[in-house]
Length: 246
Ligand SMILES: Nc1ncnc2c1ncn2[C@@H]1O[C@H](COP(=O)(O)OP(=O)(O)OP(=O)(O)O)[C@@H](O)[C@H]1O
Image 1 (spheres, rainbow, N blue to C red):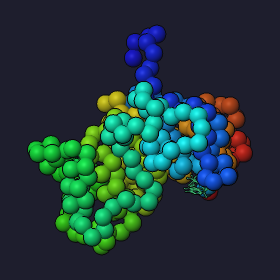
Image 2: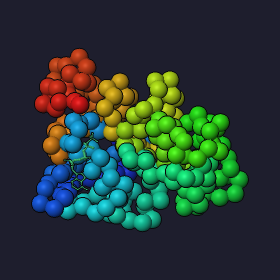
Image 3: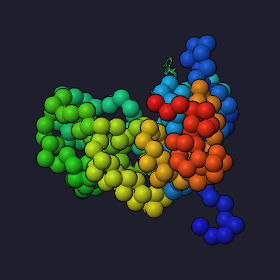
């Protein structure tokens, strides 16, 4: 980026309020994500991370504030197609094979012809499912389902990736491959919002947001968060901000 040039903001969340019935789950949450930026969300179980990423991915409406993605107020159907969302709960067709799941979602996202064939093959290789692609998903392990879900989220080459704990149940070697891929996508200008409980993954993020009880209690680069708290590690910084990591 040129000096003085403004970084393009692809996600703008301002004063977001999310409620389920009378219960407030997210309160006054504001942040932005720039093009090609990886923003990680950390927080204890139940703090609101999944609710936040779902709201940005437009899975449901919100009670107050504003979420804009690529300049459009969400939820917006056209913009949803430019997002790749990997949910925590697998949204797969268990009676279909892995390959047929990819075919189904390719159709849904308008990925057709030679591009479809090429993408499916590339992604099956990336997530190491080429040899199991013709098996029904109900025979897959939890980790295999996560890998297939990631392949689906990447299928249509989205500009924004929203990944809810993508590496749960993934072995350390493959986790490294995933991160190599996330970094490659970042270099291509893809913006990534990722929730994680894994502290060394947090170190790979450009910035981190710490969420506690529905509030964004800290936001900054890993170095800033450590410097502000005088902690040697992200985990230490997080604890000093008063969040108990689960
Ligand atoms: N559809 C819903 N209806 C009512 N309450 C909900 C709903 N979805 C989430 N919640 C509540 O909102 C709070 C935040 O949940 P959320 O799943 O966003 O947390 P999280 O930080 O992602 O947790 P984890 O790390 O365990 O996945 C929790 O108290 C949860 O029970």
